[in-house]
Amino acid sequence: MFDAVQESALRDAVPIDIAPNDPLVAYLESAPGAVELAALDLESPALAELRASGITLVVPLVSNGELIGLLHVGRRRSDQDYSADDRRLLETLAAQAAPAVRVGQLVREQQIEIQARGRLEQELAVAQLIQQNFLPKELPQLAGWQVAAYYGPARTVGGDFYDFIELPDGRYGLVVGDVTDKGIPAAMVMAATRSVLRASAQRLQQPGVVLARVNDSLCPDIPENMFVTCFYGVLDPATGHLRYANAGHNLPLVRSGSESSELRATGMPLGLMPGMNYEECETTIAPDATVLLYSDGLVEAHDPEREMFGTARAVEVLAADHEAEPLIGDLLGALEQFGAGHQEQEDDITLVVIQRREAGPSSALADFKLDSAPGNEREAMRRVGAALESSGLTPARLERLQTAVAEATMNAMEHGNGYAADRPVRVIVAATELEAVVQIVDHGGDHEIRAAATPDIEAKLAGLQSPRGWGLFLIEKMVDRVDQHTAGSLHTVELAMRLKGGDDATDDA
Amino acid sequence: MQPTTLEATARAVADGAVIELRGEIDGLARDALTGAYDAAAGPGSLLLDFSQVDYINSTGIALIVGLLARARSDQRPVSARGLTEHYREIFEITRLSDFMTILAG
Image (tube, rainbow over all chains, first blue to last red; front, side, top):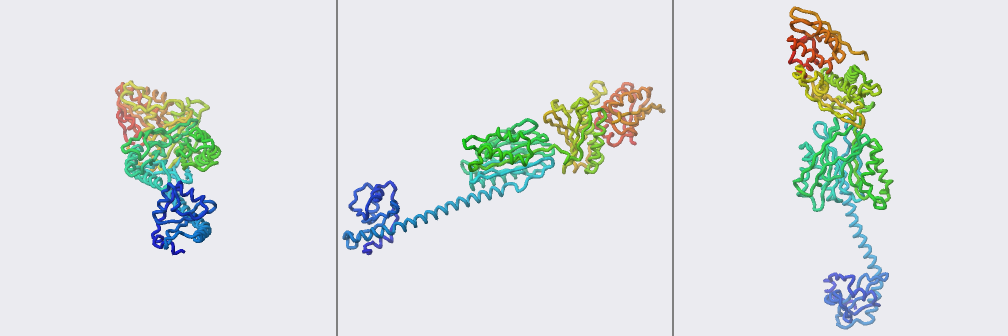
């Protein structure tokens, strides 16, 4: 009987796909056993195909009431119809084969699924590897600054990144960015962005120009529908001066005194269109001010009611005036409490905190207060001199710094504090690797800071200009750097002398 | 802190007068400087001796400018000696040295 099966047909068997909505399926599902195709009258593409390939009889393979396949035979060699015995035998065979075929199918489905999931997991693992390989291994050690960073990948790994780039003259590039996609392609774009940015930052000074350059080099190769948001700032740790540009990234938050603000600068995300310009802005980070750079994973996290965490909540946490490292913990804690922790993290979360520390007693070489009384500037000179005696400043340069300290202290006592008995002047002396720094703090924070006019001695001798007005002029001439800033009611003048490359031979007046 | 003090004594010399300065030239030195200039009245040049001066601040510079202005209207040439390197530099920065002769030592 089995010779009835055409060997050639078996050899040449081509799988026949039967669409789930083919009427043949419904018919066979309810068929009691073997079915002669010739007897069927159905508008069925599958039936036509079966007939065309020479099949005359099919027996449904049913497992748990589900049609899982067909046992089919062609014409008998004798060209006679199949007998009732033949059909019974085929039906028995089909009934026994069906569960085994089903098991085989399940095993195969599972294998395919495992393979697919394995590929996905593997891709995620590779993406994560690329991602984390390109994040900084350690945080920069900046004298007078606290730096902390956090990167929390979502399970599917978004394209967040951050970077600290050491630049000439002790400046630092600060980068936070986000590639709008996930997986390996996003990780590759992130890696490319990072390396172009690093290279451009070394060659180009202005952050806006750097972003424009990165944009132009990303544009030709970036996959369609992918772009990169990125904030790039250049920080001078010695002065707190920050020059920055932004390619559509979340605006960094600054907390200074009791005020919060955003570092605004406009620019298109990277990789959308070549030839873009990026607005460049600048600010000075005051002592004790905190800057938070972050990704949308923070502010766009949702609670179970789909409400967003938002910037306002981030500002609230920032306002509690934490140290850099605990601030990250508190932000994540606030996020958890907000309810985002109850569900899977939606997107990568990147947090970078930089905090300028007022040189406290721990790191300062001297930190003292002087009553606002005429003549007390001499005490400031003396104590600054003692504190910096072994700092490496040459005696001549130390003397210049002391003269500037005396002048700034006089200004602080007179103009800042109005010689008020209850308003002392605070003097803080510190040394970084690069500079000796003296900060003179008074209570004149609400006063306008005047620019030093160049005194004209001829006008003074001719009685056309007051003989006075030498203070600020002298200060600026005596030291390598003067910075002024206010935080609330406090006004600080910062005087700095470089410790290297400023020997007496180059002391030109 | 002790109030800062300046002692300024004038004495006549062959071609004019020498004002010897001792102490600190700041805001409190006004009377001493004016008094010494008055005491050194007379024709001829004026030599300011800074060798015993250890501090000059911006207010002190203003007083020296005032003294220079008086000498100028009195048509008395002014010179200075005994300035430390540091104050010599400050006299140059402020251009005081353009209006008085700075003598070494």
